[in-house]
Amino acid sequence: MGHRLSKIYTRTGDQGTTGLGDGSRVDKDCLRVEAYGTTDELNSAIGMVLAETSVPADLRGWLLEIQHDLFDLGGELCIPGHIVLNATFIDRLEQQIDAMNEHLPPLKEFILPGGNRAASTCHLARTICRRAERRVLSLAKQEAINDWGLKYLNRLSDLLFVAARVLARADNGSEVLWNRQRFSQP
Image 1 (cartoon, rainbow, N blue to C red):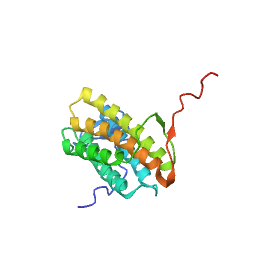
Image 2 (cartoon, rainbow, N blue to C red; image 1 turned 60 degrees about the vertical axis):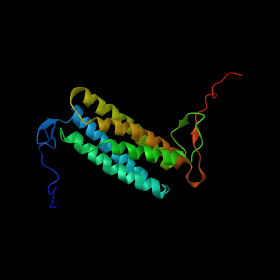
Image 3 (tube, rainbow, N blue to C red; image 1 turned 180 degrees about the vertical axis):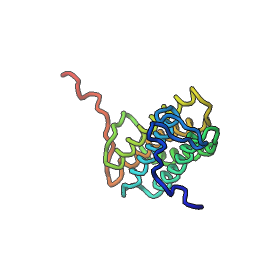
Image 4 (cartoon, rainbow, N blue to C red; image 1 turned 90 degrees about the horizontal axis):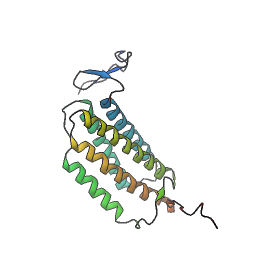
C-alpha cells in the first residue's frame, strides 16, 4: 500500500465542510459526521483503557479487536452504502460478555463509575458508546445505514459495562456501589 496520507492538511475544510469517503462534501456538523466522529472518540477512549497496565490479556485482545471493529463502523458511516458489520460481530461481543460475566458476582445494587483508573476509563468509554449509539440512531432516522452498526454499539456498551466490573477488581480492588440510603432520615 502506498502513502495514503502524505499530506495531513488540505485546507478543504476551512469553510466548515468535510469530504465523505465517497467524495461528496457535507457540513462538519451533519449527523453522519457526528456519528462517525463520536465512534472515533469512542475508539480513542478504548485506547485509553488499553493504556492501563492492569487490563488482563484476554480483555486486552478483545478491546483491540473492538478498536478494529469501530474503525470498520466508522468506514461504514463515512462511506454511504458501505457495509462491513454483520451478525457475527454481535455474536462475538455476546460471547465475550458471557465469558467475563461468568466470573462476576450478581449485581444487587447499581454501581458508580469508579473503583480504579482502568475501570473509570472503561465507564467513560461506555458512556461515549451510548452517545455514539444515539448519534447513529439519529442518522438512521434520516438516511439508510447498516442496522448492524446500531446493534453493535448497543451490545458494545453492555460489554464495556461488564469489562469495567472486571477492571474494578484488578489488583484486589472493588466496585463503588450506589448508596441509596445516604440521605435517609433518622
